[in-house]
Length: 355
Image (tube, rainbow, N blue to C red; front, top):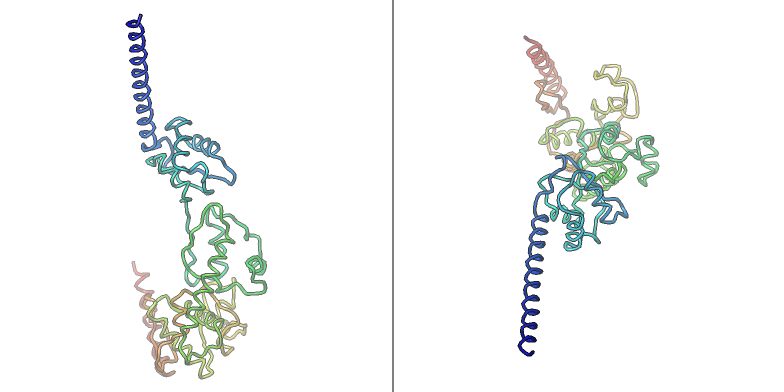
């Protein structure tokens, strides 16, 4: 009987060991399968597919969205286990995420945990006016539109600057945004960036600059921005304007006249335009314009408060299409430069029209 009992115990032990071995093998097999799923490409999705995690979404909801976008890899249980293992289920960040077919489940969940959302870009170009800026924001997708039906006055009130003219208030740069953000969010950042840049530039101004405030620096910088796209010319043009301001001479700059004409400007500036008085006509009025006329970049702002030394009081375009200017100290020199400009301009146009 003792022998039979021993045999029974031995059978039980062997059976237990075998079952344990099977369980361990099954566990290893399942673990390896789980690891293989976690680190293999999700596939099955379009190259430009995205998924959006909305506020309040639990992981099962996100998983259903992933399935709807074509993610077929792994079982729901594998996804839930991986979400728990990577601490993602409780730390999902709201936003839109790219679904590249080569992306692995582990990397995708890591992005969702860290909030590495899909980002878009919109650029404010140096020299744009407020109409051009607002048009660019209207065309930016998928930027939410909150200001499209607002007037300029309503826009500034929405930004918290009621009564302020919007021209020149937004720093030209490329701004990053997500699907959940609006044009108002971008404008707030651009406004803050201009304020910060202008403050820094004003603090670093030359001692003898003929400007009374940072506001005047912004206005002058906008005029400089419209006069040239050549970076190295900006200090020289700023120098001409600074000397004119000191001498009480009118600035006599065409971009201000064009701004005063407004949306009716047809691309040509005529003598009657130069003689028609508006608050922005620097031929008929001395000093700076009442507001900026464009969005100046950082370089134009720096030039406005640190103009180049010299004795030049005039400048005119070379006329060859390069955008460069000839600077003169006297009216006689300037008239000669204007004559050369007209000759060069006609020759340039003739060559352009030649077959």
